[in-house]
Image 1 (tube, rainbow, N blue to C red):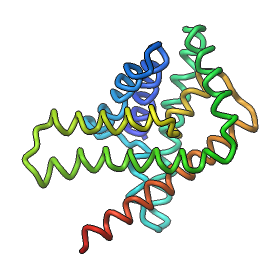
Image 2: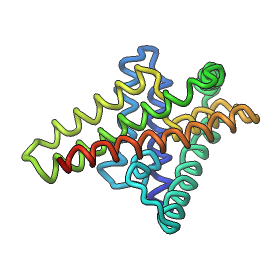
Image 3: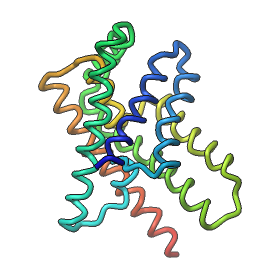
Length: 202
């Protein structure tokens, strides 16, 4: 649970850096600190773990605990910062209101987000085991995957939990949006993992 809370916390740090930058490219680059810290310290992040999900009761419970920890870490940091930095809180609220206008588009945006998260995690894990690739190259590939998903407008559920908490956007529409975001992040990750696994069996 602590590793899950810390994962949500560092994603919130990345989200804070992103919102603090007027330049979206620099902001996207700095946001990647969140996932890099998750990978380096082996924290438990829902979007990184769910692609490897197995259809067993035990695994559902494990993913559920990770998700709860991520929500506590990201949401808790968002609420704390909403009282300490009014400017960034207002910026987060405006961002969240824009997100809520996406409607059904949250489905492909969430799916595509976790496809890139899966590739980032696989690059970090697989290249480290199977190929003699410098750690800096692996880190660069992770950063590029994260920058691409942000610049393309893909939706990361744990980051969005942080944004909605920071902007204090608490209503039914926000709840439904986040639930859809979580579900379709999971579907995207599971589908791409299955597709890559089948390809590697050839």
